Length: 422
Image 1: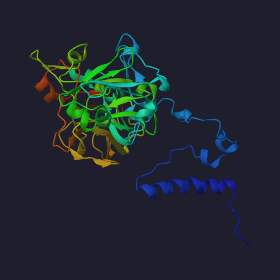
Image 2: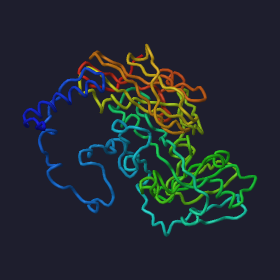
Image 3: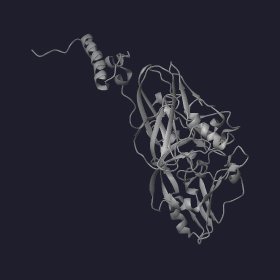
Image 4: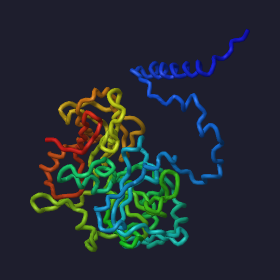
């Protein structure tokens, strides 16, 4: 006689013990029953009824259970959100690519909504042939795809004077990393006939603030792009649709959005606010000027204040991001005791120049107090400094270019807060 399947109650017991045993064998961990096995042994709504068809969601969106994963604003940061910033939820992400809908926003006059059919880009100044391009014109040049991070110069700026904001979304969330599609800026300048005396480029945006930034010609001809797509689709309006400038490894204010004009000159422009606003005020009253490059930096994204330890003692995956305007990250060290001892983290995923790098460190947490830190080293040998060393060199007056080591304090209950230690 053929063997009959065990009765339902026996099968439930077998499934329960089998699941627990498989988890233990597969992971090599001291697994414990978490409860809730009825989602496997009992029919649930999601396997009782058919779901939506393919036409119900013509543009895909995240699961309803991920509705909390959003950019967030700090209401008191500015008087009006049209000239403000919201922050990438770094603690909710993994890998190195930021989803388009979660890339932080920084605006000076709100989002410009531009009809692509009416879009124009002018190149004028010290060129042989002043030109005006349509979006279709730009797309006729050779295209390139490049993955780069974009970081606001004021990222972590509130932390210059001590621990201020409790969450890496707010301390470090003015950074994202995407694949840009566009054309090399040098192709457009070649088409216009760049004159030999042209040493600087003024990039101007089409938004209500007419945001302008001066860029040295060496950088413009090296790796700058005029981009019209990110992560495979058209730029989002808040990211400069239909066209933005890409200035790899340099501060985000130079990546002019809604790009409408490129004027070639023989010196940096001295008008408007651009040469005075983005400087680093030192303790002696002087200011560092033209500090464009974004220094080597890292942050632990989980565990962190918005991603506390909720499962208690046992195996723990520590993860974070590292990046440098100098190129590739070569190593990331992590410390659980506030920098007294360091261990080399595991870099995983693509390691690309001027892109985010993902690192991991796995260990067993015994419930003791932790002071979590990460320290990145780039391919040119630059080492991420402590905040104490950074302030000793530059003072506490700046709000820009803070790449100091971040510390998260973990208490015995797994609650985490932003702290500083000497």
